[in-house]
Length: 257
Image (cartoon, rainbow, N blue to C red; front, side, top):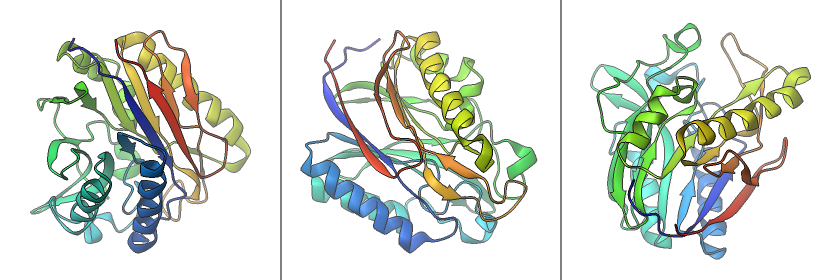
């Protein structure tokens, strides 16, 4: 495992709105500005921070990588001299993926991950599954950093592979949601999930979740996202936790090893 260099990470717990690209870009812009003002080295956005992971017109609206949305993120990275990891819906010719990118301070895409476990009962009509044969991690100024997306981590073999590749930090955009009456339980499940991934892999885990936003369509229409974004230590303890049902920027200092 490559040596970790200390960094300040900011988890942008955004109230994303399904299908509202312009609004969601405004939310990311504001989060980047605040993260920069608080000295963050790495800004972490949620899953599909452009359109929402259950946007019912994903196959129509997804953008290429690079493209309008990723160039927007690259501009934020350059403007604030900050690393960014963000989820997006990616068009690649006839296929569409739920992807996440890791960009350096110059806005260069160093790593692209396509979600492997896509919950096809919910999303097969929205996008395709990524394959399990692509690298999950890349060398950065902070050491080796890996990226997975939400349900990928339900199969612990996937984040464990990131550890095998030598990563010490896993950045994991999420979109945990539940019926309104189950939101408190859902938040407990989300936090236990992030702590469990950290404990089982020995990685620091930065899990950014959406907050407040309602799913607009599909089988989960009306469900809401709980927030409670978390940075977990390798021993499974929480280093920082975001608020329940509130948009927020959660800032956490990860010490050098």
